[in-house]
Figure 1: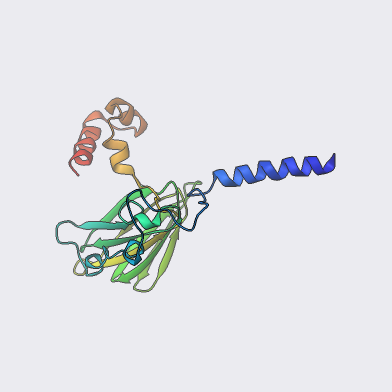
Figure 2: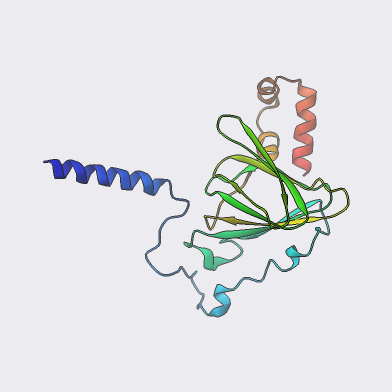
Length: 203
């Protein structure tokens, strides 16, 4: 009787732990999309070279992803990368990754980074080249290059082939939530919200 209780508990715990995984476990070495014959090129991604060369050419901030969308060999592998390029004054606005933590490494310049935990505590840090910072899964965080003259570049590693990104400015002000609801939620007037909605839908 006791062994049945332990077995039931083990099954329940395994189910609960499985539901918290970032990516589902796979039952093969790797996943190959239909119509693709794997070779060495299938396991190679060359899309980050340009992103490691300083400031973005056409924006104050640019992210170049190597997720399962851009690099199909990552499907089922529970890993991905992103290269973040910051022009002087560039910002990666507050956002979350619902399926993974983010481990950020500064490879050029310096960044101010921050996260807000579930107790609404803000943690900030100034990172120099070679410094790393972890943003726990699902928590709001940001990065900014406060250097007025020089660009910054960082690499981010994720524990999911598709970490997902929820940009708070776009989600809140660019998603179509009624402006009256937003004005009441932020205890401000409709004109202020209208400006924020306009800015979010333009960017």
